[in-house]
Length: 518
View (cartoon, rainbow, N blue to C red):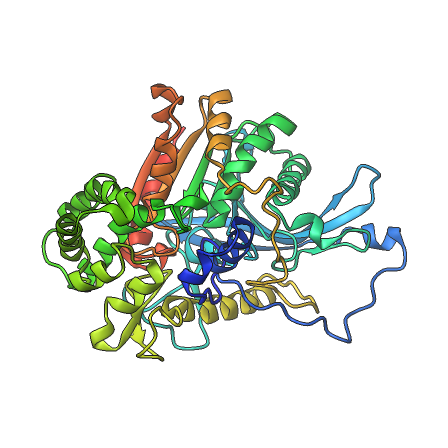
């Protein structure tokens, strides 16, 4: 689910700004998709295999037959749960990757049947969010518009808006998430990094395609949150390493360049990228009035126009100009002029989440800014927790574990890692540069001009604001006009996991159907 880890990124942004880019990368990953604390290794953990033969033994998959009604049509399918073994050049097992595959029954010729590989982000997240939230044949039914918690225990219902009628689905849990683990002769750290992750997931996709004889099928990737980073890297990697040309990449509540999220001394890009989402959030909570689309247009223009110019002036901005800019910001966000002036025209999203409804004694969500729950610390200067994360984690965890055992028939003694901190510290590379995969995605499209990209953003997403990816792509100055037309942008009302809002779920299926058309 969430675009990047979400556990509890409660560190004050002012402290974060003082950290090195390496440290920032680690913290942001743990903050973007709900990271959770690493658990201690249990004393009674099953004994590891003593031989390479045992370690390399491929677990037997479990398959079930079922059906779901989609768009008024009964869709029979096979769900296969299993582990795929990744091996090194010597043939020794490095890791086993847990995955769940859904294939529609009755398809005689699969060469025209698309297959979509889906994964979430974190780093450290399993694929449960995309699986049980939007794409799979089962989903969690959240009450109302998705801003209220479900009555525990969470239940699954048939997903009549699943994509299974038109596309086979493969949900991948990267190594150390879900039930995926490094093998006896593998080192978990060999999979916990930007390129290592791309390599291992790419290897999984290659093997899966070969075993299922699907090289002739149309191929798509769908990545949520940090999964967008992974998908962008995979688009280039699969092409260059295996000659696998993709038909499409879906960036769902994603990012490409960490600079669009990280505020730092001397850098004001994140302030600009977040401003339009501040405006749409303020409008949702009725702190500002007017037509949302007009407010959004005005906020976008100001963010990358007058506001950006004012930020570049730093402490040399004239007082009169500073007051005028603060007044404009207040009009767009509902945050008082005095607060903007006191904060030197810069308010980070954690402060915004605390300030917007401070008078009501509420804090708003990071993953879904529509969610507002009671504050636990009225005197805090930043949001002390994320109610939208609290709303979702229990429901998805419970529903997934029940589904695995009760319906899919998969039994395993180890813990299913829905979200884990065991992947940290995540290696973002040793060149001390901010991670930016925009160039890799552009390179993939340059070499495969038929590759299309669907960018799905959400107006209440304060984890990966929807202005981030469009900004990143605008900076690809050498990308020809005809290739820029390969990108499609679409927006939703809710937050990071916009699909828990019923109208957005309906719209997302329509958008995906259009995108999957040949």
